[in-house]
Image (cartoon, rainbow, N blue to C red):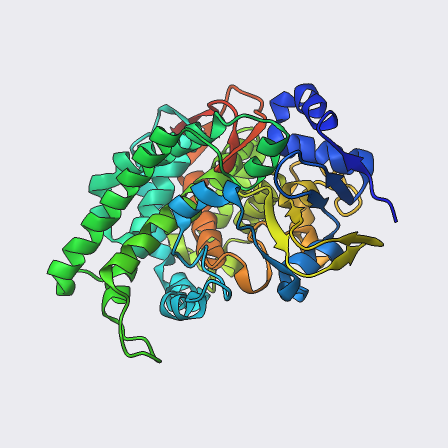
Length: 446
């Protein structure tokens, strides 16, 4: 069976026609024009297939893991430098993944994060208070709030002294990746989040490594002074080996969690904050929900999802439209057929939460921001919405990010009325999916 193919002449034309929409906009156009399976002929490197039907995505990410492995070509080098030897990049094939997952997973479970919700709310509120009455870029506000919450949950309060360095390093990484060449090969490499300026990338990663080393060194020197995840991983024996994680391993994981955790949470929050700033009636409803929540002294108890269902819906809708990692790939390891077409080993299967999350076949009024769509049960396929991936290698931090987002949005609307003079921005994929320009928001105290 034939499958629609775009090649070296087609993709640059699409890029030029939709340049302001970036790679994810081009991917969406490919799905609109050619359907749920599109072959992208690349001059050098593996042939790529854009796979966007939820049933096919489910096969790639969950039900047939033996047929799809992590991409190991040259384009993965920047990814490896930022996230190599972490639970994000390790696999069964590379070895060490199960052991690392066993060591880290307890701190990422809902049962571990929910008791910390009041502290997370306080951390976000402290970050917002520094900009009360001011106009601030929504991404900057989201980054500071995210890092403060990450400090309460993972890094401890001493991360505050490194706050500016971390934010600047993540900003630098994004700028370096943004300047990649958007050729046919660059479009595929860009889908994996790679291909930026060498010196800037090295400097930014070096900064994050230095911060991680300083955090770990303080805990090694004075283990009794810290009660956070880093300290726990340095001291808790593995149930199989009896050994805790080595300091160098904890340092690597700390860098990975900044890149894969802090950067993605702050990207999603920035879109949610901007959406709220344009909807005063939704802000008022969130403020009322927060006042009823036990997190803020009200009577409604339970998990953050039970206490803050509207905040949960706002977050889900924000990352449906703007998933922090909008496009990523798996390499075909065994022959496989999609929609009657054979994909040979070595081919790259690209899946896109962004494209599938906006597909009108599965979402009514798919381009509209509408938190009400999350009320009640749905008949949509499970993998119509997969901002955290799926299967065994789904994002370890899903429960953490979701709980943090709920309390961050509730705390913001409880304390402030938000206003924005800008109607919107286009999504731009570079490390994460972020606005292509500053989106100022004014925080007027309630």
